[in-house]
Image 1 (cartoon, rainbow, N blue to C red):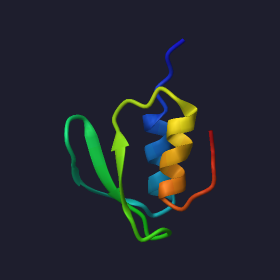
Image 2: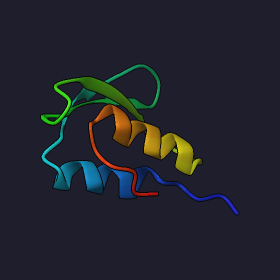
Image 3: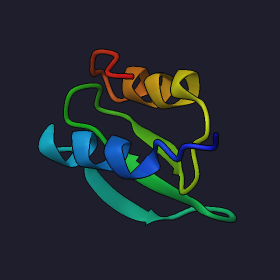
Length: 65
C-alpha cells in the first residue's frame, strides 16, 4: 500500500495560512509559515506519515498524521 500524504498535508498547510513561495530543487516546493516564521521544503510525494508530521513541525503546527 503506497499512500501519498502530500495532498492532505498541503491542504492542512493552506488551511493554517501557510503559503507556497516557489519551486525548489527537483519535485520539492518551498512554503512559508506565519506560525514558525520559517521557509521549509515540501516534497510532492510523501510516503511516510513521519515525514508529513515532520513538515508540520517545521511549520509550527501540531501533528495530524
